[in-house]
Amino acid sequence: MLFFQRFSRTSRVVSAYRWCYSCSSASNSAFSMYHQLFNSNATINPLLTSKYETSCSFLHAARHHVHHSATSTIEDQSDPFSLVADELALVADRLRSMVVAEVPKLASAAEYFFKLGVEGKRFRPTVLLLMGTALNMPVSISSADRLSPAVPVVVVDNLEAELRRRQQCIAEITEMIHVASLLHDDVLDDADTRRGISSLNAVMGNKVAVLAGDFLLSRACVALASLKNTEVVSLLATVVEHLVTGETMQMTTTSEQRLNMQYYLEKTYYKTASLISNSCKAIALLAGQTTEVATLAFEYGKNLGLAYQLIDDVLDFTGTSASLGKGSLSDIHHGIVTAPLLFAIEEFPQLSEVVQRGFDNPADIDLALDYLGRSQGLQRAKDLALKHANLAAEAIDSLPESDDEDVRRSRRALVDLTQRVIKRTK
Image (cartoon, rainbow, N blue to C red; front, side, top):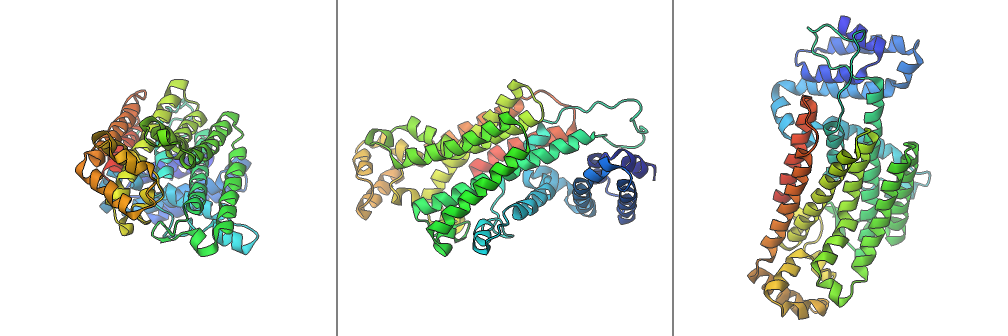
C-alpha cells in the first residue's frame, strides 16, 4: 500500500511501470488499487491530471508484462522488438488516430498502411524507442524523495515521463514520413504490391496515393511543430529534403553516375539512411545529450540504414515476391543499378555495356543476371552491409558507460538489431 500511495502522490508513473514490470508477483488487485488512488488524486492535483493519459498507458503495458512474465521475460529481454512491444502498440494506436481525415476517401487512403496487420515491421519506431532508453541519463533522487531501500524502485521524475512521450512522438513522426515516402515511391515505380498486399496506387489510383502521402507529411509536420524544438524541426525537415533529393538522383543519373559506387551510396543515404540517422539524433537532442553523444546516435542510424538498404538490394535479386512483400527484381526492371551489379561490373567490365542500355530488353536482364551469378557481387554487397552494421554497433559501444540495466539492455538490443538487419531474408 505504501508503494502505491507514494507513487500516486508524486505522480512518478513511469517508476510504477518499471517496478511492476520487474515484479512478477504483482496482482490485478494491486493495479486496481493504483487506478483508484491515481483517479482520486487526479481530481485534486492538476499536474496528476495532465499525466493521466500517459500513466494509464504505462499501467496497461505493465499489466501485460506482469501477466506474461513467467513464460516470456527471458525471451522478451533478448528480443529488441519485444522490449518495446507495448510502447509500439501505443505508438501504433496514436498513429491510427493521427491519420484520421474528414474526407472518407482520404481517411481510407491515409490509414491504408497503419491498419492492424499491415503496419509492417515497425523497424524504425523500434530503433528510436530503444535509442531513447539507451541514452537515458541518470536520475538524481533527493533524500526527501528516496523510498525505503527494501522497495526495488527507480524513481523517475515527471520530466522524464514527458521526455519519453516526446521521444515517442519522434517515432510516430518518423513512421509517418516513412510511409509517405513509400506511397510516393510506389506511384513513381508504378508498383503493384507493398507489404504483401496491393499497393495503394493500385487500389485507389495515383492521384489519391500522392495526396495520401502529402497528407501524412502534413500531419508529421504538425506533430513536429508541437515539440517546439527548432533543432529537431530542422533535422526532420532536412530528411524530407533528402528524400526528394535521393529520388531525383535516382531518376536523373548520367551514364557515369550509374556506374559510380560513391554516387550509389550517397543516393542510398538520402533515400533510406537519412531518416533513421537524423531521427536517432533528434532522440538524443530531446534527451539533452552532448554533441558527441548525438553524433554517435546519428552514426548508428546512418550505418544501420545503409546496411539495411544494402541487404534490401541483395534480397531484390535473391528473394521471392512472397517473402519480400513486393515484386522481386524490381530494381533491375526499373533500370536501377544497385551494389551487387556495381561489384559485378568490377569483375566483368563488359557488364557495364549491358547496364548502360537500361534493361529495356528482357535478354539484357538475363545477361546481367548471368554475369551477377558468376561474380562475387552479391557476397561483396553483403560484406559491405556487414561493414556498416559493425560501424553502427561500434557507435553504440562508444556511448558513455552506464550502470543502469535498462540502458544497457537497450544498447544490447540496438547492437543485436545490426546483426538482425544483415541476416534477414525479407
